[in-house]
Image: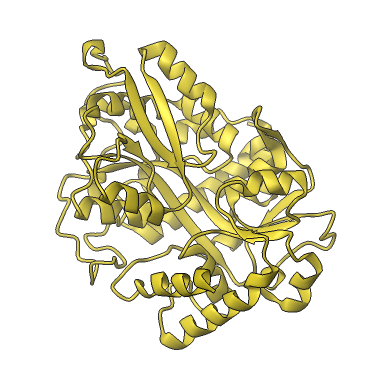
Amino acid sequence: MPQGHTRFTALLLIILLALAACGGQPTASPGTEYGSGATAEPTATPPTAQPSAGDELQVDRSRLSRELRFFNWSDYIDPSILEDFEKEYGVKVIVDPFDNNEDMLAKVRAGRSGYDIITPSDYAVEIMWREGLLAKLDKSLLPNLKNIDPNLLNKYFDPGNVYSVPYMYGTTGIAYNRQFFPNGVDSWAALFDPAQIAQYRGKFSMLDDERETPGAALKYLGYSLNETSPEALKKAQDLLIAQKPFLAAYNSSDVNRKLASGEYVIAHSWSGTALQARKGLGDEFSGNPDIAFVIPKEGGMIWMDNMVILAESPNAYTAHVFMNFLMRPDIAARNTEYIGYLSPNAEAIKLLPQEIIDLYNEGFAPNDEVLKRLEWAIRNDQTAAFTDLWTAVKGE
């Protein structure tokens, strides 16, 4: 095993242990919008490493739909994988992008969205199953679930993985162009200190997200990104309003492209978005070798996105086949290489090229020291205050 892979394997083990520590094997979540976090459902037995269906799914092609609609984050799947799925099963997958969980939830809650599969983040999964928006998974149709690292299953937002399976996970920090920051970046001050941001006014962005961006402000101010005291939220709101005239935009959709092209010199960014800016994205755009990524010394966010099937989907069988296809090690490795986030697929990690491993070791994946500075975004009855804060900031 090459030295780079050895370092990354150790790194991955640390990440998985941290995720296990954060998620544990709970019967209650760290808190949701529904109150204390007590989880009355689901009650299914946690998935084991070896699903009952065996290694290969025997697909009943007579049950496959002609199309499958996939509501996914921007630039979050390798298009060639969709082509291969269509060649293998005759099913065309139509992908529509969303930029944040709140917009996605609003569309799904309205009903008749037309979507079959969605990739909500951790807390959003719990919101969706509690509201009856998700179909329970048929594990007999997901034999490749055995490839998912068990430390990433049975998390607080879906005990037993009754409704969801991990898709990708990552972190949120700062992506920057080393040509403009030869001494590097180590603090959220690079995005909030007026003396610093005045130098690159109109050339940086913050994520268009009601938890990510207030969370970054709170970390800069010395709070937890989950702090909801009126005093802390007022300080964060004032900080964001003061920052706003210097911004190019609140942007969650094409930060990768704008960093790669040089339109942005620094940005609030997800780790995979930053890696895409560094190495490019297939035929979409070329990468910029000067892009680096850092979790600031004050800390950042860790999160996991998951595949779910909508309860209203008429194509649940085909959706299971597609999910199982995405969990094949070779497919998951290709997808990870393309989009640059962290794969929960233990077998896929063994297939990643050295280039990706080296980038992870450079800082696009967290090491043990960085993991100590990362927090999950929890939801409880107090965190509804972030919606009000974000509305006030966006309305200025």
